[in-house]
Amino acid sequence: MTTRKGTIAAAFSAAATSYESAAEAQRRVADSLIMRLGMPVPVRRVLELGCGTGLLSRRLLAILPEDASLLATDLSPAMIATASASLADPRLGFAVMDAEAPALAESGFDLVISSLAAQWFADLPATLQRLTDLMAPGGRMLIATLGSETFGQWRQAHRNAGEESGIPAYPDAAALAAMLPGSRVDTSAFTLDYADARAFLNSLSALGAATPKPGHRPLPPGRLRRIMAGLGSPCAITWDILTLDYRKDGP
Ligand SMILES: C[S@@+](CC[C@H](N)C(=O)[O-])C[C@H]1O[C@@H](n2cnc3c(N)ncnc32)[C@H](O)[C@@H]1O
Image (cartoon, rainbow, N blue to C red; front, side, top):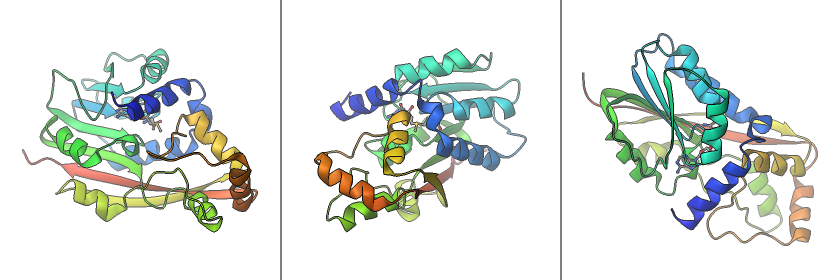
């Protein structure tokens, strides 16, 4: 595991118990993926990547057929432990797994699905391509991830102060679609209100999602305080959600 991947895994593991207290955006996105799947869901074998505490897994179990199976995977052992402690279902299995290097004896999944995990992948185009090998002919891949406008207000507050934020550069819809030929990407955005910049940053920490982009050097406290003040109080922060929908050729 690379150092950065280890840092990401450790941050999410440390947040496994606080995660759901801050996961308003993640709940919304999980709900929208379920809406998109529609009913009934004609799938038997499902692979979930970056399941976290199981927000999406729980929703999937509520709509999957009785003879379906769901393998929920995550990079973080503590996330898997938390999810497995709260979810008991004979259709459900868990594995600690890096979605970028899937080590599975099985393939042929009818549905490969992921909610708000892919923004942490180091090489998203290669990963998407690799994941298609795990899909059954005619299978579907649904990946919700963060888009380029995400946290725009926080980035702008940095620019206003002549600084650069530690938020990674996320793709726009066209760039994400180009990563997997044949895929379709939809965008949707919402804003969440935070009491102030401190509350926004605290919520990222509670999620385990505060790891900055590679090479980012944290700002000295005084400069950071100036940026935080620039965000205002309360502040509305944009979550720009891209959903990639791909069907593998087949029956
Ligand atoms: C923001 S959480 C989303 C969790 C869950 N899908 C949800 O919607 O609540 C991101 C999750 O992705 C996992 N993750 C990050 N990088 C990963 C990777 N390379 N492979 C698998 N999981 C990864 C993290 O451990 C974390 O649990």
